[in-house]
Image (cartoon, rainbow, N blue to C red; front, side, top):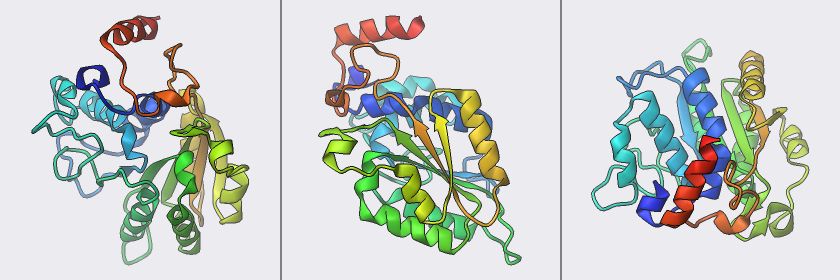
Length: 253
């Protein structure tokens, strides 16, 4: 997709792919043939620059044809560089301005409660670890805990890199888990590329009562492509056609 577009965010899309695959194929209650189904779970990609991974999941689950994937970032395409809820079926919220997705997820989680207080659906939000630098994330975290939003599950794509380098060097947020615990969240640490591990974490989150859950998922930026893995320079760079060929060969192995 990004090789065809000539621009976009490659590294963070690859780090979050296994997480989105687990969510869309095994966890979320949704109906691609009826994207507005009232009882569906809600999903928000707060790190909106990883839109290519979201679009791939939406296409493979049937929201639109996979042929459209190669139109990403092109004029008049429904697939914008960041998710647009007004253009793409299955996108619950337009994102891209980092730090705002969790606040929206909190609102959706509150709205999910019926008059008896029983949740009608669950809400999931994926954040980047660099995104945790945004203060609004922690305002939302405090609110979710205060309102006991146990139908809310946040997942942190913890690849340790952001556009300017290592997250520890740009703005050290370690320990990420301890910070979420301090805000009253149930915290689960997981391997973000091990689907069985992710499924177990998501199952545990579903059974948690009285507080929201965050899954801190350890991932690798540029996962699966040797010349991209753990390199901050691949945050917002598209591969050349030669690099696309090499990458596709590596992904087949």
